[in-house]
Structures are given as C-alpha cells and as structure tokens.
Image 1 (tube, rainbow, N blue to C red):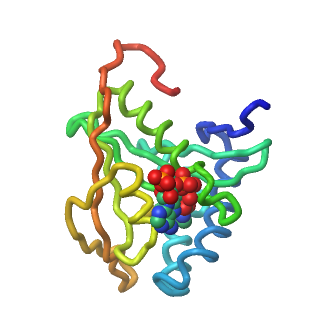
Image 2: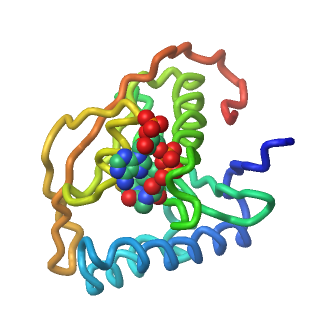
Length: 181
Ligand SMILES: CC(C)(COP(=O)(O)OP(=O)(O)OC[C@H]1O[C@@H](n2cnc3c(N)ncnc32)[C@H](O)[C@@H]1OP(=O)(O)O)[C@@H](O)C(=O)NCCC(=O)NCCS
C-alpha cells in the first residue's frame, strides 16, 4: 500500500493559512497545560498568525506542511544558518491524533536530509523544559546542550533547553542545485 504521508514546502497563501489553523488547534490543545492560556494567546498572536508566518518566510524561515491522505496533520519550520553551518528547527507540531506513530521521526529524517544536502552538520532547537517532547527528541538523537531563558516580550519568559544533534552524513551540495528533498 502506498505511503500517504506528504511533506510540502509552504509557498502560497492557502498553505500559510493551513499552517496558521494547525497552530491554533495544536497549541491550544497542547500548550495551555504547559505554559498557560495567556502565554499561548500571546505567542499565537505574535508568531503564528498567517501574516506572522508570511513575514517569517520573508526572513528566511522555511515552513513545511505535513499531510496524510491530503489532510493537514502538522507542520514544521526551519531556518538555515550557513555561516554557523547549523539548521535551526524553529517549529515541529503534529496534531494529537497523529502523534506517537512515527510521523515525527519521518519529519526529522526529512529535516536531516535537507541539512545534509545543504552541508549543515548540526541541527538545533529549543524546547520547554517541562515538555514531554524533550524525551522524544532524545529518542531522535538530540542531546541537551544548554538551559536557556528567552524573553519573548509581553512579560513572558521561555524556560527552555537548547538541544542539538549532529547530522550523520553531511555532504555539501553543488552550487545551484535545488536542495529541497
Ligand atoms: C514531538 C513530536 C513532533 C514527535 O512526533 P511523534 O510522531 O509523536 O513521534 P514519533 O512517533 O515519531 O516518535 C519518535 C520517538 O520519540 C519517542 N516519543 C514520542 N513521543 C514521546 C513522548 N511524549 N515521551 C517519550 N518518548 C516519546 C517515540 O517512542 C519514538 O522513539 P522510538 O522510535 O525509539 O521508539 C509530536 O509528538 C508533537 O507534535 N508533540 C506536541 C508538540 C510538541 O511538543 N512539539 C515539539 C515542540 S519543541
């Protein structure tokens, strides 16, 4: 049976709107118990509306929609830092009904291929210290590199770990080659 998982770069307004809809649904379901409703309201409004996502894409963030059988089930976003030779995983969120069945691992494999083809040997991300997903990232090969507090404005602080992973095979791509897997 063909695998129905699709990962597509977010390019148009419809895809941006789909990512923003997923953000609202996932963040209210998942983060209120972790960081409180007020901070979720603030972060969604500041970082995950359609205009905010469009603005981030304009600054070099790359968003991807994760779909199964043409239904959006999650999204992730990365930002390459060529000077530092690192890829920042800025977002990775799956709908509750799609967790724990290997999809996060598939997304991470896609991200690793992308990093590898761009010659970026380190993946990094930040995750709330109380988020059970810290353990998922450890299973996916990340290690805790540092504890960090990030002031996101509005009186809110993110109390996070910075986690890192070395990309196994990292071969720089020739110039001019489209690096999207
Ligand atoms: C974190 C997330 C992307 C992982 O995706 P997933 O599809 O649920 O994960 P997978 O099923 O691919 O599991 C990958 C590995 O992590 C482990 N894992 C997954 N969730 C876990 C959890 N909550 N606690 C401990 N281990 C976990 C799995 O057992 C698996 O390890 P294994 O293959 O060695 O058995 C997803 O659960 C999610 O969106 N969570 C809510 C939002 C979130 O916290 N995002 C991260 C923000 S920084």
